[in-house]
Image (cartoon, rainbow, N blue to C red; front, side):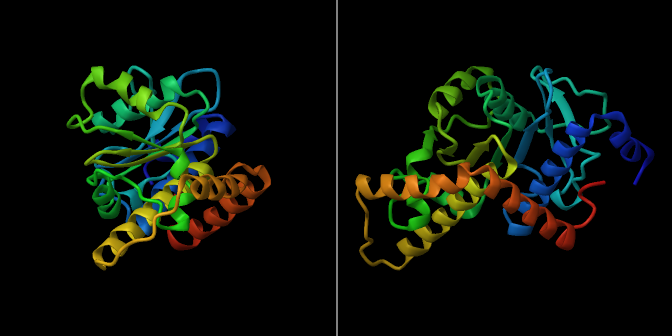
Length: 255
């Protein structure tokens, strides 16, 4: 570890350090699932406190090398605070600054480009009600049409409008996105969405007629599943268990 990394913990508040450790753990989990796309996807976390700052991965660094200390802190204008030798993904900044500006209930935003997620994002019908996993989240999924790489400022209002008050989004022909007030909320939502997408593509490949459930069943399953996502006691236990897994299987994230 270099001197810059070693000094970060002493330069930030205890609350920011915890946020950094949680975010670094999310990057390691993405890598452990095989959801990483080299370093072209991104996860952000709002820095606790009155300032409108959030953390992003150092662009070009593989996710197994992301740590609490090398995460990059930026403001809503894209200024790196404090100056860092690392840069950030411009498209990542566009997406995440848009969400953090518009949605003050969002602490964490996760965006992925997995094979299954992009495959479903390329389907006109989007996510289908053919699995329990899909119905756990379908009522909370928004869609955003493809506009090329997310580098244009005037796309921001459309991202905000399309996401609305939902916590999941399928970006057409692009990938998946989840948000949450707690790191485990954002993680669990995208975990369910990614598995639902994988199941959908596997079921479609079999060529048999698929069983589609109606809106009443979708709403029922969503309500049943939502109780866990919003339970604070469950969130803390589940997140602590995942942090233990990351410590065992990808140590060093919290340095």
